[in-house]
Length: 174
Length: 160
Image (tube, rainbow over all chains, first blue to last red; front, side):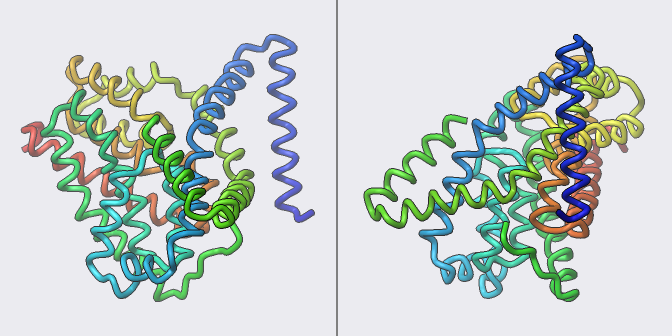
């Protein structure tokens, strides 16, 4: 085992022991943390299988050339538009957008385009926006969309270009 | 939520009708990808369980309602960055806060950082993209959220 793995295993063991002891000794804060863990794990288990099935299907069916054409170097400005549109239709929080962004990049999507996708999926998810409008009003959501999309694209481009210049390579095997 | 089930279900069904072998391969790949990232997900879950205990919704509600314009935005973006909340909880909460007189720009800072800046998702983002990228992306996102909050304030006549 690498030192990192040892620390991780030790930390995990401490956490599990703490939760188990909290329930055994009726320690309130520990129990509350345990319940949080349970409810959040459940929420994630509702989303993740579907998300990863879609990722698996995506990787098997979608050709590399297709991704490169729409999200790659040659796509130019259209790549960003596709990224925003794709983000708009996806349900799920950041932890769902990240694995999908990773798969897109593996298939040849440009770095700046996947950062746009991640940023846009945080802001422009249509199902969530409908919800937002009903509680905060159309004006609020409209301002958020119109201000954020150009900023997300601009910052993604800066970040992507900077990383490409530095010869950034994404880790493999995840 | 159901939307995701329907999309995934239909996609899988279509895939199986079109090509059984490829579909099985996709499922295997899905499992492989999931298992590879699982340790990072567990790290995130542990972080989430502790942070949500330390900072419950009631605390957030309390602090968002207090403070002036600019301290309000800073506090809101701080809470939005370090916590995690699904939209179907966050927006009704913001609706309540709005009725209590909390400014639009404060709510904007909160909801935007909530969704764009992920300190709790750090383990996952790091596993995919590395530490440097994760930090840079989150800093950019935080700044964008502040700009959005400022613009929201301007358009709603809360500042200037």
